[in-house]
Length: 131
View 1 (spheres, rainbow, N blue to C red):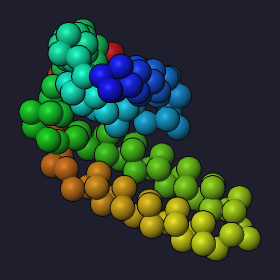
View 2: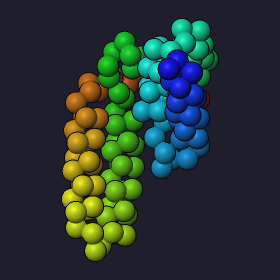
View 3: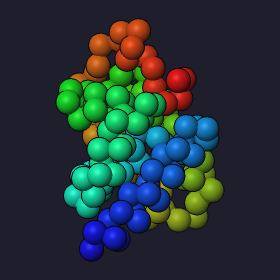
């Protein structure tokens, strides 16, 4: 079981790293998932990720404060809805899929907005996208 969690964690980490360079792919959820999976499968890899020079402070700040910077909230929700609206337009004959995508979009938006908004400081403006 630990091996499967580690494999999924590395896949998630890879997707998160790709998301740094590909704006349509979210970075934050994949990094947080990787941290959670490593925490439950490999203390050594969890320690490595949390102490990573670029990604570690970002993950630790979220885990400690349970807050997202306003910039990240705006980018995440905007990217989500742009992608969903394009998908909904492509699926113009599939009403049930359009309803499903809209429901998922509302739920994910609510989830993102449910986190506190982190106060902007010069250090907190440093995300994996602009480091």
